[in-house]
Length: 324
Image (cartoon, rainbow, N blue to C red; front, side, top):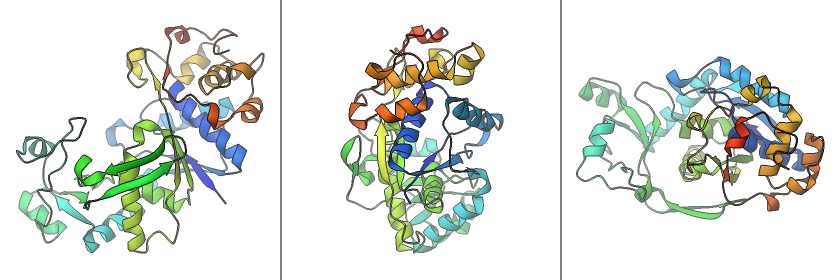
């Protein structure tokens, strides 16, 4: 059975941009009969606010977005991630790294990506015989990096189209476990998606360059017989909701939390009308709006190809014609 996942991170409350992506994910799942798994991505250390997980689930239910299985919590799957990391290190697919971020940035030989970010120059590749040796040398636990080989990683995104990345040149060997032992996002989500048998991923296009890294991890785990024959998922990367300054929607643009609109008296129908307008449904959204209507009318072909710009008018309680 096809499976997708909703994966909020409890570093803060859900805002309108998050809600738009989750809404499209939910619509596609119900239109195509995918099972929906809810996963709470709660590995981001001190940024995690446990109460936000319950708030996210409450906000989703308020909109009418439900799930078929879960919630599963990443923080309760640490043993699973560690087994994958240990296997990757033992096979030579990954290695210990004692470089600090400052050392990487200052390395004279460090290349730079097109966006100016430093690409890891491979300083610790082949440097240590084991994680223990790296620890003894540095006097502190090492991080673990995935060894990226030369070559293009290509994939077809069902919204963003065909993509190709030279991960070695553009991104370099990337961290899969932090020095404190916490699994990094790239590794954790791959292991999660294998565990949950996820076949379809719908998320924002700010994560497009995560996809080739995750595909490399899928391939490595497949070589180690750790995927149980489960293929890498299909992807749908959607344009984000941006603030008036052209940056991803955030606190700097004002209070766009769903919970703030709820507290101000907005109804789920009003929020759905706004979000429906942002996903290309304006001609069909008259009067009361519910999820059934949105599911019936939505087509991925009508989803705007460009980012949505959040307007200051949305700070106010939503009038009945907002988004119409």
